[in-house]
Image 1 (cartoon, rainbow, N blue to C red):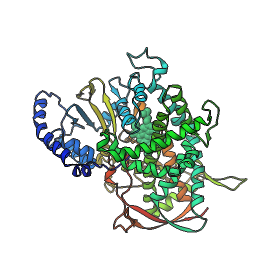
Image 2 (tube, rainbow, N blue to C red):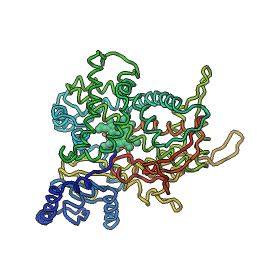
Image 3 (tube, helix red, strand yellow):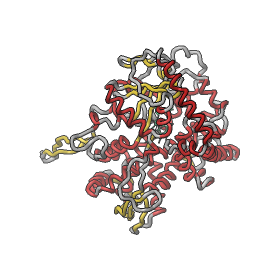
Image 4 (cartoon, helix red, strand yellow):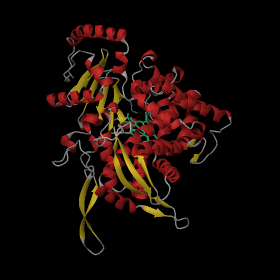
Length: 555
Ligand code: HEM
């Protein structure tokens, strides 16, 4: 999920509200003093010029500044933890060391990921109260065995566990993810063949290309081709939603965020209408449709909808929470990372050649048709491409993985208050110089070989040579772009396959010539792309510049 924040523009246009906020700013220090006098926590605090205002304002409008200030305070206190208040009633702990972060992901009845789900389900996906109540009333956890104290909850009312089982069995499971990747490979090839005539150079932006064609192939893979035919502008609507999504997370009232909510609601309406129409036409969710069919797409989508129908959810929830969440979750996260992988590879000619050489070793030709495809299992084991994938995710996923302390939580020397939020922030851990830095390659820099080590290999003639091996030894716990524990992203395997496949297919099938960098309005840029800071904290961060490339399809 990703989007720029509209709050500062919004305040300038609304002088009365701005005045109200100014008065609140004057009053809140007094409340703060009253509250802090009773606060015995030893956790260092993130200072706030205006208590309860400055940090919240930065968090909601300028996450980059919030991170910079947090990093400076973490360095000063050397405690790997900070406390601050999102509202006078809501404390947030920001935790950094691998020990703290892994403790968040271990099973612990005092820690829950439900609150963040409720927040997103209501505000981002716009689910109705009747649909939300099913989850709100279920505190029995996502595991097969209910959490202590909830052993008597009826199996059909264990909504979190039911959802988790569908996600696990039909998306996260290796066989299902491999199947999705194979379908995606076919559809993405169709997209490229439709767009690029063989042997003819076509100049196109990398981001533009993937935003249209990777999104179309991934959407068709997961949700079927029917919805793309029914709503030919669906992909544009998804990207419109991407621009406003982060401003929706905290649930500002409609009068404060009208146009963002309208953008969300049109997308929800389109998905809901499609599902209603297809069910009314008689689509049988109980029938065996195989791994993929055009109307409802993958077993992942069909089984999720079937589970919701059995559980009494509305068709709006099926459209809103299943299709929108799934299509947005996959496209808005996997595509920006793939764009970065391609930009890095295309910009460096020797890297491009090295990746092409590597990818050529995993191409397979069908003896009957002559069609060339990529062997997925071999592709996933390529050391250089894996290193590039990890490096692009490390640098371009910016996400606060969030948990709630439903009882006091012991974390190292600290006890975190019941009712607080606990966040692990990728942008702090993934850029830690002590973990990722190299004397010639600081952690902030893209370095394709950062996750390679060279080992001796003896060939059949007994000659020993150094070969690269992918390695994250000692660093796995500092890399958590997909979250962790039982609510870890179930789409992580498919995301990795999509990202590596797309990069590999373009490198293998095209001659790629960098034409130049341009601004969003198409004018020449005097520098290459950087992270678009407006998307900091919103998961995958797209580049703020476009790379124009001459693509010449070779096969
Ligand atoms: C680079 C790509 C992606 C990134 C960085 C990403 C990241 C995340 C993160 C951080 C979470 C929360 C995990 C937690 O709380 O511990 C999450 C949840 C989720 N993701 Fe992803 N994701 C990606 C791709 C995908 C794809 C491709 C899909 C589906 C096809 C997907 C589906 C989901 C779902 C359904 C959840 C909610 C799981 C639950 O609540 O149990 N994600 N993702």
